[in-house]
Image (tube, rainbow, N blue to C red; front, side, top):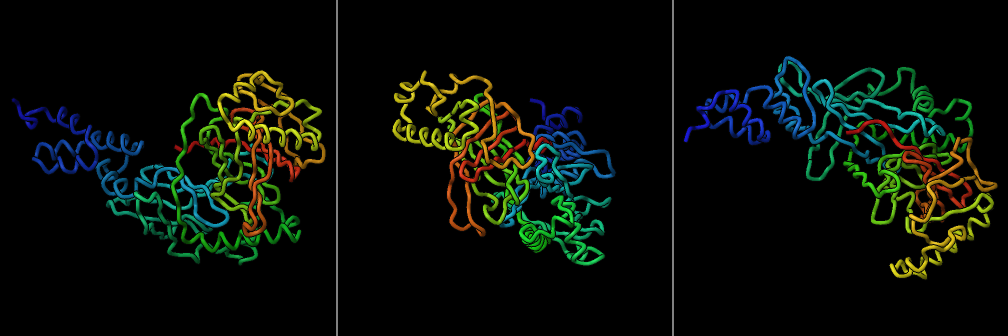
Length: 416
């Protein structure tokens, strides 16, 4: 049988291109033929694409150097992460661009524009210089890139840390007050006039101080984006939503059997990041006429009746079948296949809509609960509401007791 070393170099390189990076490093030590074949660029290009989903651009560094000196150690940073700052959190995506790893923070747009693009800010970069040495830069602050560190690298715990080594470079050259005003305008879309309102001023200053306290040393935990299954009402993913005086916040919509979960990725002093903001029972769909929708008393009655019937039925299959065909205008738990593809939607009388241009029709409506709490996440409790699916990229939540509507829009920026 002919030895592999007798194969043409091109064929041997093709065979080695199916190995992982770790296996390639081992194979290169077997013999001279393997060593030479393992240095071919496309071998490492294929390895990078297979393991990390990236390709390197033309540069003075070879794909082998980029893999072994950059991606082998730091490649696990690629993906989407949540910043662990209580109570505010944060959304970060790390991508491979121009042969470097770039950490980008995605912030919700200015309130109440849920349909606007996300605001993007560079946090850090990991790259190689022309000699192949690793360079880590912090990209925050007005004075350009400066030295940073990523001291905690532990792929098994799905966490990492980024650290700034020059915190003074983050300061505004005109002082702390100007730094605060600039942050309010750029990050929150709040004018100097709005800042003068005492409640708004307290919320903004508290957030500014806490975020500035942590921005020199962020800790991140990985976010896993769930797949979209054909039977799901609305595809899972990230959404921007309105949260009253706290502005827009980001939630991650996922499924747990017949429940929809909306977990906060960013939060506020009342309900912090990582808490379950909205919980929806898709076994409790509702169809209401316009008269029922605009009457808060009728909405409360219908919701209470649906909850009681669900409790009596015990979610048993037999009872669900016995309920099929009953009118859903009264709030009965009805199979979704009996509901129309579209139904009218109206804001109840006395509810706050905050100037949001909401749709006048929806696809589905369900009973659910929303999480509320006092300042400092004191006395948390769940309050009744309606989860309203407008279309594939937009939904709303009617807070029945708070008499307000939150509108959510999908984050469309590509994070893969």
